Amino acid sequence: MRIIIDQVFGRLGSHQTNPFLRIDVSHPQMKLHIEDPVLIVKHDRSELTINNREFLADLNMYEPLAFTREYAARAKGIVRDAIAEMADQGDRLGALESGADVFAAIAWEEGLDPAVDIQLAPLSLPRIQFWVVKGERSFQEGCVQVQLTPGQTQVDLEVGSARMYLRQNPELHVHTTGERLNVFC
Image (cartoon, rainbow, N blue to C red; front, side, top):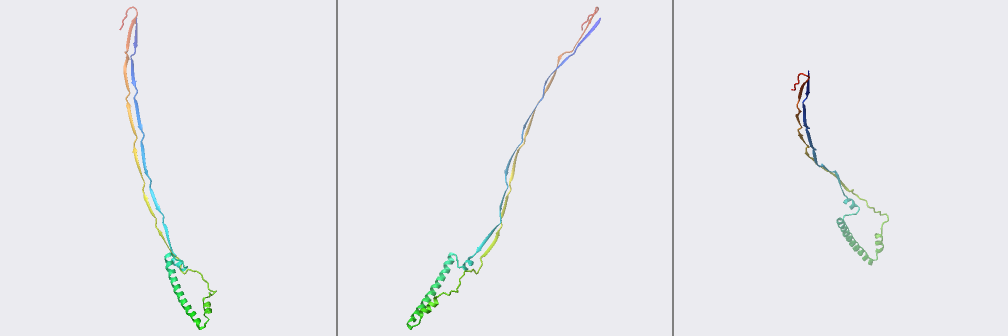
């Protein structure tokens, strides 16, 4: 007699879903507002005045108001002298009746001397004044304004699953073959 044992193993089955990790990233953003600094510089400057009134007056050159005053005074003196000279010459011509040679004397007195040299030469120098006017400096600070929006990261995890089940039960088959005994379990 023979015993035959036949064993069939059980089978497990599994059903899985993989986990899924979703990551959403938003980048950080930075906004800048810049105001430039301002530097204002006014340089030192020189000022100069030249007063040449006396210098020009020595050359008989005047400003309009001084010119009219000066030449009005000169004209008044010339007219006064001319009137006095005419009166004197009139008296001298009146002496013609006495027989004097008055015409020759007057001609000799009125003639120009050839040795007379006339030149214009200033006697005073122009007055020059000089000074420095200080410059100015001003500074306005600039500024930088920063607006930062931080980035965000969102993580979403879908959990995976694993399910195990018994697909086939284990079995054991035992039987005998031969003459005498035949048993099945």
